Figure 1: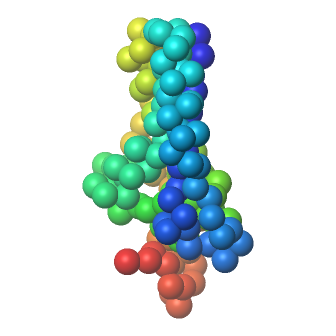
Figure 2: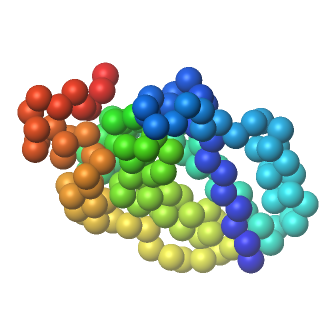
Length: 143
């Protein structure tokens, strides 16, 4: 049993001063999809890019409340380097891996609960609301 994952952040979405571009070419993304598909049902692809896009468009429920999140710098899904997920971002990815494994392989792994997600978000140094609470002059969260 294998699980392949892909995260793609289009260059225009990267707002970090440390990173000029963090985009995976579509050809590479397609190659990963192709390799994963070639193994049939023994590999399930976890599309992290689609997950982050959905979270940034519709929000993500954290502790029972929809949280506006974004993969842009200061948006709560990625750390200050603009590339690596934040603590909450990793938790959201973990839930997606669990969901994919449960669906694709008939597993029954419990996801992180809303209360656990809220606990992670409330202590995440990259969460824009935590940053704002500690520094009211912070420009985050970004619109």
